[in-house]
Length: 231
Image 1: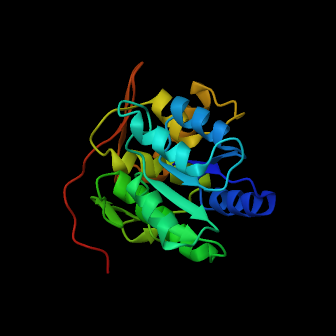
Image 2: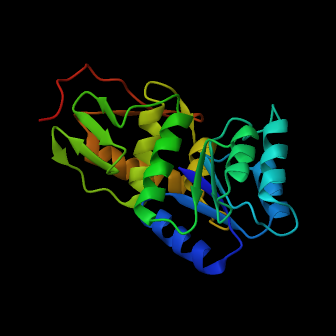
């Protein structure tokens, strides 16, 4: 999952970027409203975290322009406003412009991460916190995966890959889509690297769960027969 963080405070930005990356998210950080506007018009994101008091363009204006681009890549992407502006008028304006949630500074990191998880689920049409595909289960709250009720040891990149495939279970996901959702700016990730990540994940899932390769097109996590819930 890929996040755009628009925050001009370097201490907050560094702390958030580190925490979100530890949780397996790819994070692109910008420091101004104009940079946020440019990034959001060019790159698909699963979530935007937007400070309101940005230089060179306010967060309100970034949000207004984002929602005005009805056919844009992020026109419907969830937006979390993160700001020191705690007046009720600021909250109402941000929500009316199309924000999905609002968190004021100072904040607890655990609460922000919980809101991030909830908004990303909402972006996938309200996907449940526990996603199951046969013996495979993924808990998006704890960001942990289980196979036949046994926890899977997955790297951050493998976990992100699994989450994307599970959200689109039974549907084809292209290599380009995987790169867009998994990788940050400046990361040189080739199609061969994506193949390696898929190969590693496949080895940990098969034979109970299969990832099909469609030559020249991408990958599909095959739907399994329904299983009873985890104990």
